[in-house]
Amino acid sequence: MQWTTEALAELEAIPEHVRPMALKAIENMAREQGSVQVSKELVEVAKAKYLGINTGDSRLVKKIAVVRCETVSEVCPGIGCLSAFADRRVAFEEYDRETQLLAFFTCGGCSGRRVSRLVEKLVKYGVDTVHLSSCMIAGKEHPFCPHRDQIKRAIEVNGVRVIEGTHY
Image (cartoon, rainbow, N blue to C red; front, side, top):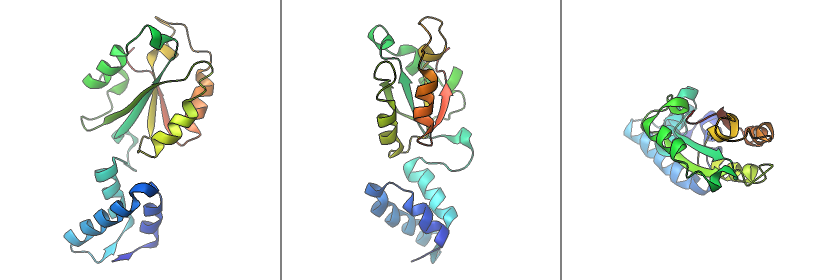
């Protein structure tokens, strides 16, 4: 099967541990369509289908995560964040029912010491958006996170979009 240069570049962007399976699935998709060549567009369709990675409209995010305050996690079981996601309300309204919440983790304590390492791992699983939980940004029921901007930068440096808020 022939691959365009652009298609090969897209293939290289797929995590290495799943690349052989992706190659096989993409070539099977091309054959099913009666094509003898794999295009960039076909790779993007396959990434959206099999990996949940959508390179188009950012409103079509398929895999997300939520980071929350380590201190607040001692008194909050996460019901507000998780039920808002399940019902697709407040900060989760833009997501369709196929969107997956792949991770719900704490910052690691002030000053968000583990966020960068965890986000690096999450990117390998297709996460492209991380929500800062409402407890970190609102200062409503809990104290405002003094490290919010640093945590945001630690996420964004990995090419991941940050949305502030979850359920209020």
